[in-house]
Image 1 (cartoon, helix red, strand yellow):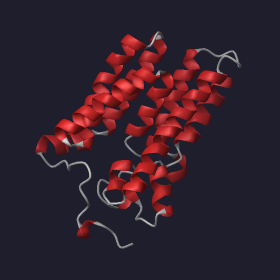
Image 2 (spheres, rainbow, N blue to C red):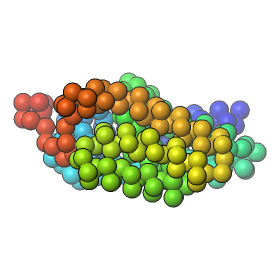
Image 3 (cartoon, rainbow, N blue to C red):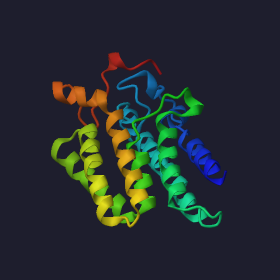
Image 4 (cartoon, rainbow, N blue to C red):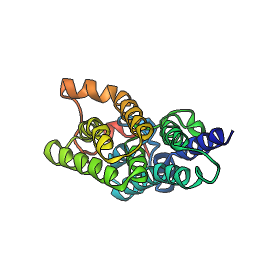
Length: 208
């Protein structure tokens, strides 16, 4: 029963969409209505509002970190093992991807996944972030950087984490993240994927 509570709490935390909420605060269009229609930091950045994109990035990452941090701290108190932590990690990611508060239309999960990895082990998160940054520096494409980082993260987890259950959870998260990028993969293969920070064309932006 306690595991179910952990999972439900993590899912609800993940369901908070900082892209949508931040856009409302900054008076920006709903990120689900323009660009990639993905409620994430990269799409918010297409408005040209870097601060709004930064707030979205930090918020989505923080919720992933918070859910797993709480699970790690509270699981022993309630007699639960790392399986509950792994379940909470997957649940907060699914909450971001399929948020109950926003019609189950969520983001790709990159920032939330990074927050989860940082909570599981700071070195794991930093290694994955470094991989993303290196790929972004080389190719300037956010989705490609995320895909490359998602491929390497489970390998880092194998080396860094001491729990097979948590390594498996990282593998599941990265598989889900790659699957969520299937449209980006098609765009990459056709050469249509946009570069980081590229502003949306005026005709593609809804009136504010």
